[in-house]
Length: 225
Image 1 (cartoon, one colour):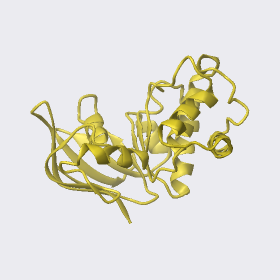
Image 2 (tube, rainbow, N blue to C red; image 1 turned 60 degrees about the horizontal axis):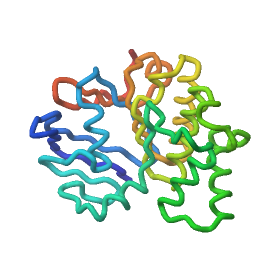
Image 3 (cartoon, rainbow, N blue to C red; image 1 turned 180 degrees about the vertical axis):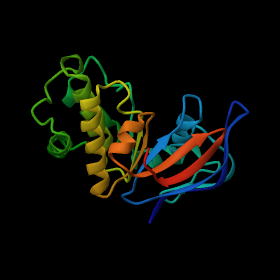
């Protein structure tokens, strides 16, 4: 089943065409890399998936939602089906791990305390941090903070995770751990689109590659670098 389906899509920001004639699809449970140099359009493509950057032309759909002029009232429903992993974490520094996750659940309509506690326990267990819920973000290593971000992305059982350079600020060993975690999540049925400039990771964990270059998206398939 196609989670993402782009056909001849143009993506523009402030009337500047960033990517043109973008055609690709993403299947359920598929893990795909998005590579390209800085400024090649990777972030614009990712942001178009959750309707932060509009589709200028072409046909784009994600999990049954058309992104062509999507009404603003539908955007929150779309985003609840997408988990986003940022390279700079974007955790609330004045709240514990538990409180960071609690904030998201309450913001997305969860009210039952027992269900909230159970869901937070489940996602922290999934990323190997079940014993760190009381910690403040500054008390965690970079890799632990990124695992909290992944736990946060998993809270509402998304069908798609968008990971924007999730290993960029981490040492190689920790980056390897984060990549393995995302691969495992894909193996459990959640589609993962991971932007990266680290070709060593791509070489060590081969998967389908989408390449941003000269304003286009090229589907390289599974490649060896």
